[in-house]
Structures are given as C-alpha cells and as structure tokens.
Image 1 (cartoon, rainbow, N blue to C red):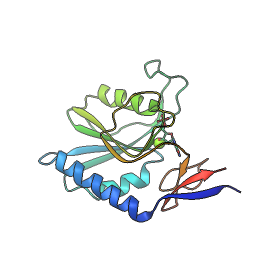
Image 2 (image 1 turned 60 degrees about the vertical axis):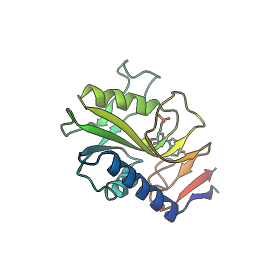
Image 3 (image 1 turned 180 degrees about the vertical axis):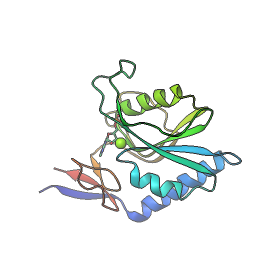
Length: 172
Ligand code: IMP
Ligand code: MG
C-alpha cells in the first residue's frame, strides 16, 4: 500500500499562495501580467494564485510533452497545447507546480522568449533541489524542499492524487 506522509497543510498552502499573490501584485503594480500555467500539474495552483492578484492578469496554459534529450533547440520539445494569446511585449510569468531537474522550464522560457515576451519570470509552488540539473532562477518560489516525491494539489503520481487538497510525500 502506498503511504502518504503530510508535507503541506491546506492552511500552509493558502498562506503561501496569498504571499506569492501579494508579492507579485506589488512587483508589477501599475502594470499587468500574463500568467501561463504549465499543465497539468499547475492547474489548481494557478487557479488559486490568479485570485490573489490585485493587478490585471491574462491567463493561458501550456502543455509540453516530455523531452527526448536535454536540449530544447533540437526540436525535441513539442507542445500538446501552445500559447493562444498574444504575448508580444508582455510581462509573462510561467506558473509551475514543482521544479525538479529544471529541464522543462528552460525549454519553456526559451519558447516564451521566442514569441516576443518583454520579460519572463518563474513562479513555482515548490522548488525541489534533489535532481536539479540546470541552475535556474526561480523568481517566486512558494516552498523549498530537499527531496521526495510529492502528490496532491495538482501534483500527480501516474495521474492519481491531483485532487487532494493537501500535499503529501508519496512512499511507494
Ligand atoms: P523538471 O523540472 O523538468 O524535471 O520537471 C518538472 C515536472 O515534473 C513538474 O512540472 C511535475 O509535473 C513533474 N514532477 C517533478 N517532481 C515531481 C513530484 O515530486 N511530484 C509530482 N510531479 C513531479
Ligand atoms: Mg508540471
């Protein structure tokens, strides 16, 4: 039987999302942002985060398929959902559930820049250092964890557990 060990409670997540919303609203005051959620894992985090913003925000989602190797430029990254809205000269924030190796994000940043965004920043609920391969700057990080496989609040294991309102460490 898989074991679920509590890591972040509903309340901790709520406070973290509120703080991220306040910080982002302050950093972009007098402006507006385009938030792009990385599917599927970020769908719940994104939904809560945009409701904590006091600045105008446009939203979209992107779904990147897994990469065949470690480079983006080889054309190995394909998207099952691309960005539909116009982001030319816009301030973009990519919203991720969790950053692990960093490979997905590096490719997504490159893609968003190629579409003409004015700036690209990263907001991740969880910054996990265990398997980091690329030194990536996470501008807005909710929590930092050393290691472990997390599920809940959008995070899955083989598509299960996304609906759990708290975050757990999954021990198989
Ligand atoms: P990476 O940073 O390119 O290695 O990939 C990050 C993606 O892998 C995240 O957006 C998640 O979808 C998935 N992932 C990484 N670590 C976990 C985890 O602990 N639980 C669930 N999904 C994870
Ligand atoms: Mg993800």
